Image (cartoon, rainbow, N blue to C red):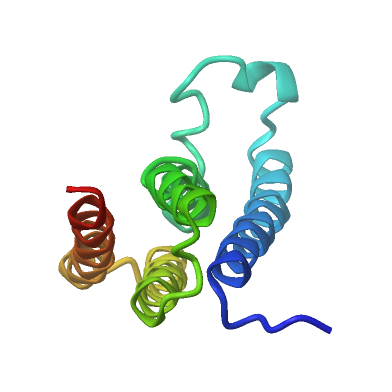
Length: 141
């Protein structure tokens, strides 16, 4: 059995978390659509499900967020793997910091959705990415 506390382990964890949020999204969305009498074809266009309750939209919004900025995380993680930096204590620590903060961000957005709290956690996760990217950049300069 491999060690999960690695950069690839952090990548796998964020992938699995994103899939959990996907299941959570449809577990909330499908019953809400049925209750509102919305047919699947009624949801063809962006914004057409904005009539659903906020608690349902929050999870869908978070799923979309997990498809946005984490692409930078994935690219940086694969870059670190390509150049052999994935085993450094700093890379592992920053990768896991990012993942833990993104999970916390998800839990905030999908439950209480306090914007300033969510923004603080998002900002901290972004700072972890910035630090990691700067360290990688400095290594090639």
